[in-house]
Structure formats: structure tokens, C-alpha cells
Image (tube, rainbow, N blue to C red):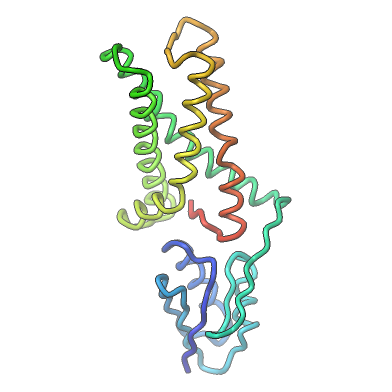
Length: 223
């Protein structure tokens, strides 16, 4: 017999794979197909399995809720004291920070060395764009090598789960750096390195609550 269930909380192919694997482990389940676009799970079973039993199979992933079509879907509540989620959010944010910093500061150094007449506004815009590109690339490589995603899926997941976080990080980093140094890279000045550290800390903290929220409510981070 086959039953279709609605599943909330799935936002990417990694989420779908997690739900599929968890449901396949439930005793009596013989097959699971996930339709990510419809947020549905097609479950094949050799005897009737209650919805509660299937949901229990997702107990390790509380961000996912499973109901029969037409049933009431209970949105997961947000608690801000889950240390394991804070640690995972911090790790994900650090990956994003590394990726953003590579392109951001490389672009600033390039412009100030070869095109010193570039306006400050143009420098900040180009630095943000470069930081976003290298961050997406870094996230994609991590998903490909660590999570074994196919390249297209890795790129799509990196864009969908991290872009808002990257933008917030880039804006805060560049604004903080500009307020302290005026946007000029002066390697011989200790204030430059202090400003660099402060801007990176600010860039790390700015999207951290957002990343925690996405993880806690939607499990939206697959790396």
C-alpha cells in the first residue's frame, strides 16, 4: 500500500534526502519518494503505519513535520536556547565569513593597487559582489566535497540557503571597515589590522541569529 503525506521544513535537496533516509528506516516502510516542489512524501509500506509512527522516525529532525493531506500542520516553534543549533549556525556562519572575506579583501587590495582612483562607493560595491561570488563558490565546493552533492545541486543549495546571510555579512563588514579606516588598506598601520578584525567579528555576528532561526525552524542549512 502507498500513502502520500505533506512534509513541512524541506527547503533543498539535502533536506529531502534527510527525510527520505529517516522514513525508510521506519519498520514496515518499503520505499519512500520525495517530491520537493510539492513538499510531499510518497511512502510505500507492507502494512498500515500510523502517521505518528512515521513522525517518530523524524524525531531526530524536529524541524520536519509530517501530516496526511488535509491534516493540520503544526509549525515548529522557535526556541533560542538550543546550544547545538547555535554551534552549527556558528560553524556555517564561519564558512560564509571565510568565503566572503576572500573575495572582499582581495578586490579591495586589487583596486587600491592597480586602480587607486576608483571611488569609495565603487570599491565597496565591487568588494561586496566579489565577496558574494567567492562565498557562493566556497559553499558550493564544501557541499560537493563534504556532502557529496552533485555540482548543480551544490550550487543551487548554496545560493538558496546562504544568500541573505552573505549579503548581511558583506554590508556589515564593509560598513564597519569604512567607518574605522575610511576604506583604505594601510598594511603598516596597526589600526588597519584592528579594523579588519573588528569588521570580521561584526560580519560574523550580523547574520548569526538569522542562520540560527533558519536552522531551528526549517533546518535550512545543509553543510
